[in-house]
Amino acid sequence: MDHVTKVAQPIAHATAVGLDSSRLPRHVAIIMDGNGRWAKSRTWDRTRGHQQGAEVVRSITTESVKLGIARLTLYAFSSENWSRPPAEIDFLMELLDRFLKNELPTLQENDVRLEAIGSLQRLPLNVRKTLDRIINTTAQNKSMVLCLALSYGGRDELTDACRAIAREVQAGRIAPEEITPQTIQSHLYAPHAHDVDVVIRTAGEQRMSNFLPWEATYAEFISVAPLWPDFGIAAYHAALQEFQRRERRFGGV
Image (cartoon, rainbow, N blue to C red):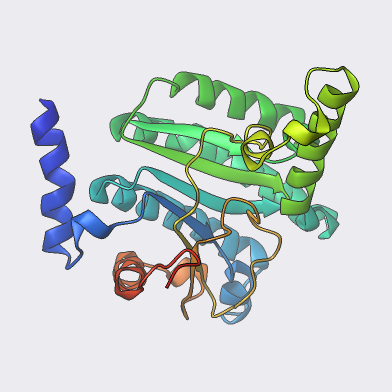
Protein backbone atom coordinates (compact mmCIF):
# COMPACT_ATOMS: atom_id res chain seq x y z
CA MET A 1 0.00 0.00 0.00
CA ASP A 2 1.52 3.33 -1.05
CA HIS A 3 1.67 6.44 1.16
CA VAL A 4 -1.00 8.33 -0.79
CA THR A 5 -3.46 5.46 -0.36
CA LYS A 6 -2.73 5.19 3.38
CA VAL A 7 -3.33 8.93 3.82
CA ALA A 8 -6.51 8.91 1.72
CA GLN A 9 -8.18 6.12 3.68
CA PRO A 10 -8.61 8.04 6.98
CA ILE A 11 -9.80 11.10 5.08
CA ALA A 12 -12.46 9.08 3.30
CA HIS A 13 -13.52 7.32 6.49
CA ALA A 14 -13.77 10.55 8.48
CA THR A 15 -15.89 12.14 5.76
CA ALA A 16 -18.14 9.08 5.60
CA VAL A 17 -18.93 9.31 9.34
CA GLY A 18 -19.57 13.07 9.30
CA LEU A 19 -16.20 14.35 10.53
CA ASP A 20 -13.89 16.97 9.05
CA SER A 21 -10.61 15.10 8.54
CA SER A 22 -8.65 18.37 8.58
CA ARG A 23 -9.88 19.23 12.08
CA LEU A 24 -9.51 15.92 13.86
CA PRO A 25 -7.47 15.91 17.08
CA ARG A 26 -3.95 14.52 16.88
CA HIS A 27 -4.00 13.30 20.48
CA VAL A 28 -7.18 11.97 22.10
CA ALA A 29 -7.21 11.08 25.79
CA ILE A 30 -10.09 9.17 27.37
CA ILE A 31 -11.04 8.71 31.02
CA MET A 32 -12.87 5.40 30.87
CA ASP A 33 -15.45 5.72 33.66
CA GLY A 34 -18.45 3.64 34.66
CA ASN A 35 -17.47 -0.04 34.44
CA GLY A 36 -18.59 -0.74 38.00
CA ARG A 37 -21.85 1.19 37.68
CA TRP A 38 -22.62 -0.59 34.40
CA ALA A 39 -22.28 -3.97 36.10
CA LYS A 40 -24.12 -2.91 39.25
CA SER A 41 -27.10 -1.67 37.22
CA ARG A 42 -27.41 -5.23 35.92
CA THR A 43 -26.90 -6.77 39.38
CA TRP A 44 -23.62 -8.27 38.18
CA ASP A 45 -20.23 -8.31 39.81
CA ARG A 46 -18.02 -5.31 39.01
CA THR A 47 -15.64 -7.61 37.14
CA ARG A 48 -18.23 -8.04 34.38
CA GLY A 49 -18.06 -4.31 33.78
CA HIS A 50 -14.28 -4.39 33.49
CA GLN A 51 -14.50 -7.27 31.02
CA GLN A 52 -16.98 -5.43 28.84
CA GLY A 53 -14.88 -2.28 29.12
CA ALA A 54 -11.89 -4.13 27.67
CA GLU A 55 -13.98 -4.97 24.60
CA VAL A 56 -14.75 -1.29 24.10
CA VAL A 57 -11.02 -0.48 24.21
CA ARG A 58 -10.54 -2.67 21.15
CA SER A 59 -13.31 -1.01 19.14
CA ILE A 60 -12.32 2.56 20.03
CA THR A 61 -8.66 1.86 19.29
CA THR A 62 -9.47 0.35 15.90
CA GLU A 63 -11.79 3.24 15.03
CA SER A 64 -9.13 5.76 16.01
CA VAL A 65 -6.72 4.14 13.55
CA LYS A 66 -9.33 4.31 10.81
CA LEU A 67 -9.80 8.03 11.49
CA GLY A 68 -6.08 8.76 11.39
CA ILE A 69 -5.74 9.77 15.06
CA ALA A 70 -2.02 9.90 15.84
CA ARG A 71 -2.16 9.09 19.56
CA LEU A 72 -4.81 7.64 21.85
CA THR A 73 -4.14 7.72 25.61
CA LEU A 74 -6.46 5.66 27.81
CA TYR A 75 -6.68 6.08 31.59
CA ALA A 76 -6.66 2.37 32.37
CA PHE A 77 -5.58 2.24 36.03
CA SER A 78 -4.87 5.22 38.25
CA SER A 79 -2.48 5.44 41.19
CA GLU A 80 -5.57 5.87 43.38
CA ASN A 81 -7.01 2.59 42.10
CA TRP A 82 -4.47 0.70 44.22
CA SER A 83 -6.75 1.45 47.19
CA ARG A 84 -9.52 -0.76 45.77
CA PRO A 85 -10.24 -4.18 47.32
CA PRO A 86 -7.34 -6.61 46.72
CA ALA A 87 -9.59 -9.10 44.93
CA GLU A 88 -10.65 -6.44 42.40
CA ILE A 89 -7.06 -5.32 41.87
CA ASP A 90 -5.97 -8.92 41.29
CA PHE A 91 -8.76 -9.34 38.73
CA LEU A 92 -7.83 -6.10 36.96
CA MET A 93 -4.18 -7.14 36.72
CA GLU A 94 -5.16 -10.55 35.34
CA LEU A 95 -7.50 -8.85 32.87
CA LEU A 96 -4.75 -6.45 31.81
CA ASP A 97 -2.30 -9.30 31.25
CA ARG A 98 -4.83 -11.24 29.22
CA PHE A 99 -5.89 -8.17 27.26
CA LEU A 100 -2.32 -7.36 26.27
CA LYS A 101 -1.66 -10.91 25.08
CA ASN A 102 -4.94 -11.19 23.19
CA GLU A 103 -4.68 -7.77 21.54
CA LEU A 104 -1.23 -8.20 20.03
CA PRO A 105 -2.61 -9.52 16.70
CA THR A 106 -5.03 -6.58 16.51
CA LEU A 107 -2.25 -4.09 17.26
CA GLN A 108 -0.06 -5.63 14.58
CA GLU A 109 -2.87 -5.81 12.03
CA ASN A 110 -3.64 -2.11 12.55
CA ASP A 111 0.03 -1.02 12.70
CA VAL A 112 -0.41 0.34 16.25
CA ARG A 113 2.52 0.94 18.59
CA LEU A 114 1.87 0.33 22.27
CA GLU A 115 3.27 2.60 24.97
CA ALA A 116 2.60 2.89 28.70
CA ILE A 117 2.99 5.69 31.22
CA GLY A 118 2.81 5.66 35.00
CA SER A 119 4.55 4.09 37.98
CA LEU A 120 4.93 0.85 36.06
CA GLN A 121 7.24 -0.65 38.67
CA ARG A 122 4.17 -1.12 40.90
CA LEU A 123 2.58 -3.52 38.42
CA PRO A 124 2.94 -7.27 39.08
CA LEU A 125 6.05 -8.80 37.53
CA ASN A 126 4.11 -10.96 35.06
CA VAL A 127 2.16 -7.92 33.82
CA ARG A 128 5.37 -5.89 33.42
CA LYS A 129 6.96 -8.69 31.40
CA THR A 130 3.93 -8.97 29.13
CA LEU A 131 3.75 -5.20 28.75
CA ASP A 132 7.45 -4.97 27.87
CA ARG A 133 7.08 -7.76 25.31
CA ILE A 134 4.12 -6.13 23.55
CA ILE A 135 5.81 -2.72 23.59
CA ASN A 136 8.96 -4.19 22.03
CA THR A 137 7.03 -6.25 19.49
CA THR A 138 5.03 -3.24 18.26
CA ALA A 139 7.88 -0.71 18.46
CA GLN A 140 8.17 -0.31 14.69
CA ASN A 141 4.45 0.21 14.04
CA LYS A 142 3.64 3.67 12.74
CA SER A 143 -0.07 4.23 12.09
CA MET A 144 -0.99 5.17 15.67
CA VAL A 145 0.28 5.08 19.24
CA LEU A 146 -1.96 3.50 21.86
CA CYS A 147 -0.73 4.72 25.24
CA LEU A 148 -2.06 3.04 28.38
CA ALA A 149 -1.90 5.10 31.56
CA LEU A 150 -1.25 2.38 34.15
CA SER A 151 -0.67 3.02 37.84
CA TYR A 152 -0.73 6.62 36.65
CA GLY A 153 -1.16 9.83 38.61
CA GLY A 154 -0.59 13.27 37.17
CA ARG A 155 0.90 14.63 40.38
CA ASP A 156 3.21 11.61 40.55
CA GLU A 157 4.38 12.34 37.01
CA LEU A 158 5.18 15.97 37.80
CA THR A 159 6.86 14.98 41.09
CA ASP A 160 9.03 12.46 39.28
CA ALA A 161 9.94 15.08 36.68
CA CYS A 162 10.91 17.57 39.41
CA ARG A 163 13.08 14.97 41.13
CA ALA A 164 14.87 14.12 37.89
CA ILE A 165 15.52 17.80 37.13
CA ALA A 166 16.72 18.37 40.70
CA ARG A 167 19.25 15.56 40.28
CA GLU A 168 20.55 17.21 37.11
CA VAL A 169 20.87 20.55 38.90
CA GLN A 170 22.67 18.84 41.78
CA ALA A 171 25.05 17.20 39.33
CA GLY A 172 25.78 20.54 37.68
CA ARG A 173 24.36 19.56 34.30
CA ILE A 174 21.78 22.36 34.36
CA ALA A 175 21.43 25.65 36.23
CA PRO A 176 18.10 26.48 37.92
CA GLU A 177 17.62 29.55 35.72
CA GLU A 178 17.96 27.33 32.65
CA ILE A 179 14.86 25.30 33.53
CA THR A 180 12.09 25.96 31.02
CA PRO A 181 8.74 24.37 30.19
CA GLN A 182 10.65 22.36 27.59
CA THR A 183 12.89 21.04 30.37
CA ILE A 184 9.86 19.75 32.26
CA GLN A 185 8.37 18.30 29.09
CA SER A 186 11.56 16.37 28.43
CA HIS A 187 11.28 14.68 31.85
CA LEU A 188 7.67 13.52 31.56
CA TYR A 189 6.78 9.85 31.16
CA ALA A 190 6.23 10.34 27.41
CA PRO A 191 8.37 13.39 26.56
CA HIS A 192 7.89 12.99 22.82
CA ALA A 193 4.08 13.01 22.93
CA HIS A 194 2.14 15.91 21.45
CA ASP A 195 -0.12 17.84 23.82
CA VAL A 196 -3.58 16.38 24.32
CA ASP A 197 -6.18 18.03 22.08
CA VAL A 198 -9.30 16.58 23.67
CA VAL A 199 -10.11 14.72 26.87
CA ILE A 200 -13.27 12.62 26.70
CA ARG A 201 -14.77 11.33 29.94
CA THR A 202 -17.59 8.83 30.00
CA ALA A 203 -20.40 8.31 32.55
CA GLY A 204 -21.27 12.02 32.64
CA GLU A 205 -18.47 12.88 35.06
CA GLN A 206 -16.89 16.34 34.92
CA ARG A 207 -13.56 15.79 36.72
CA MET A 208 -10.04 15.38 35.36
CA SER A 209 -9.13 13.05 38.25
CA ASN A 210 -5.37 13.63 38.24
CA PHE A 211 -5.07 12.77 34.55
CA LEU A 212 -2.39 14.39 32.38
CA PRO A 213 -2.34 17.82 34.09
CA TRP A 214 0.65 19.01 32.06
CA GLU A 215 -0.22 17.44 28.73
CA ALA A 216 -3.90 18.44 28.79
CA THR A 217 -3.42 22.06 29.86
CA TYR A 218 -5.11 23.38 26.71
CA ALA A 219 -7.23 20.34 25.89
CA GLU A 220 -10.93 20.58 25.23
CA PHE A 221 -12.89 18.61 27.85
CA ILE A 222 -15.95 16.68 26.72
CA SER A 223 -18.16 14.75 29.14
CA VAL A 224 -20.45 12.14 27.58
CA ALA A 225 -23.37 10.34 29.20
CA PRO A 226 -22.73 6.68 28.31
CA LEU A 227 -20.90 4.50 30.80
CA TRP A 228 -17.67 3.18 29.32
CA PRO A 229 -19.04 -0.31 28.48
CA ASP A 230 -21.81 1.43 26.49
CA PHE A 231 -19.46 3.88 24.74
CA GLY A 232 -19.80 2.81 21.14
CA ILE A 233 -18.46 4.13 17.84
CA ALA A 234 -21.43 6.45 17.33
CA ALA A 235 -20.85 8.07 20.73
CA TYR A 236 -17.16 8.44 19.91
CA HIS A 237 -17.99 10.15 16.64
CA ALA A 238 -20.42 12.46 18.46
CA ALA A 239 -17.72 13.47 20.94
CA LEU A 240 -15.32 14.22 18.11
CA GLN A 241 -18.01 16.24 16.33
CA GLU A 242 -18.43 18.26 19.53
CA PHE A 243 -14.68 18.84 19.57
CA GLN A 244 -14.83 20.11 16.00
CA ARG A 245 -17.53 22.62 16.94
CA ARG A 246 -15.27 24.19 19.57
CA GLU A 247 -13.15 27.25 18.80
CA ARG A 248 -9.76 26.67 20.39
CA ARG A 249 -8.17 29.91 21.55
CA PHE A 250 -5.11 28.91 23.62
CA GLY A 251 -5.44 32.09 25.64
CA GLY A 252 -5.87 34.34 22.64
CA VAL A 253 -8.84 36.43 21.54
